[in-house]
Amino acid sequence: MSELQLPPAFRPLGKSDIAVSPIAWGMWRLAEDGRGAAGAAKLVHAALDAGINFLDTADIYGFDGAGGFGDAEALLGEVLAAEPALRERMVLATKGGILPPLPYDQSAEYLRKAIEDSLTRLKVDVIDLWQIHRPDILAHPQEMARVLDDVVASGKVRKLGVSNFTMPQLAALNHFLGEKLVTTQPEISPLRIDCFENGELDQAMMLGLTPMAWSPLGGGRLAAPESARDIAVAEALDVVAQAQGVSRTVAAYSWLMAHPAGIIPIIGSQKAERIAEGTQALTVQWTRQDWYAVLVAARGERLP
Image (tube, rainbow, N blue to C red; front, top):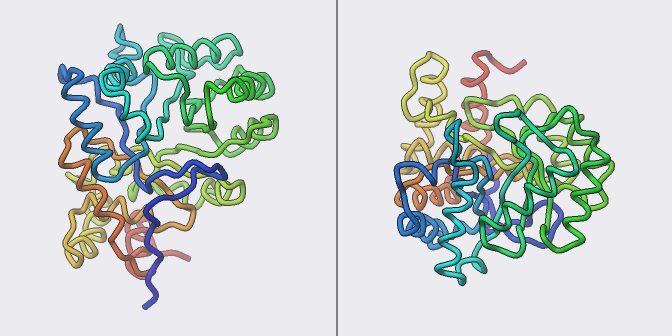
């Protein structure tokens, strides 16, 4: 039975010369639970020491609906200010373009401000990967492209990506960009398989984009499955997890990583041991039969 290829220890970010780990750590909940700089530093160290050099945050992370905009970035900025050497060990990604209480704003004026504000909060001179968090339907992609090309030319941002864009939205922005996109970040998990069949991953492979998967555990539903579909997917993952001595969580990450597009799952846990555990996914071996068994369970019907 043919085995699928294991992920490399590091892979290029899109068509760039930036090398990233095949799994990332996300800081959506970094600013929760009253965690201070010391607690945040422990988690940053846990990721880096485990071999995860790709760290993903956003200006909206930590926002509670009233205040706190930029809290996660500011907390990471405190960590980097206290230990500047950590910056050289990481590929730092962040996102912007969501403007509370408005939904989204990618006007030229706001994009420039969002990037400057992120640099200030993070206390860094350059962001390795800056991503538009969600698409602003009222922004012309050519105007967005002009700003993004300018910030790359200025040296403030190294590479560009998008998150939650449709395929036409991504293609339109990329058309106008001189500095082409290197990443796309949709929601992908064994419970959200749209990307495998709707062309998003095919587009990513065609354009040389690295897909980053947010919520790779289905918002926690894989850990505590309730519906018949969730249970079926969990059971299909458990076949491989139990055979190879890893958790269902690790099996889920590795299932995504087995895809030829080079999907990078973003670990959302804010527990040091769970972050480190995620790297076990690099050694989980999938066969085509086992991989498709998970897909069939998620589809709820056999493949045609």
